[in-house]
Image (cartoon, rainbow, N blue to C red; front, top):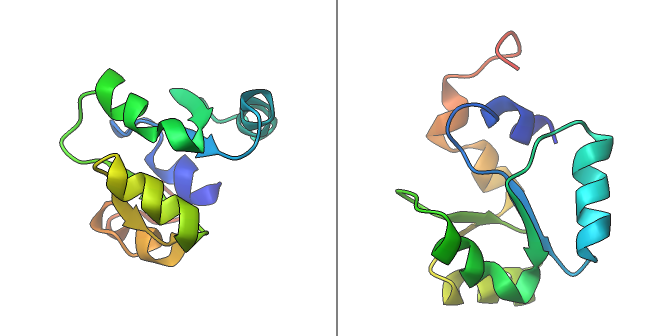
Length: 98
């Protein structure tokens, strides 16, 4: 969640696509007081791309079998959490920005 907090407000769309029910996804975002743009079932990731225009689409996942499959099928780039943390959008951030 710290990683997400670092980019909220920087023009990133924030959300989740999960096996969890959408109500549970919303509850997680709300429990961490993080505004979100979408919550959807994992298999509906393509709907996010259809609804939101962006320069690039990333899905950060922790299950290669399903997360990567759905991300690539929907035209997203797939990143592991450690790969996402190493992306340039975090390189200019420090703890005073979070």
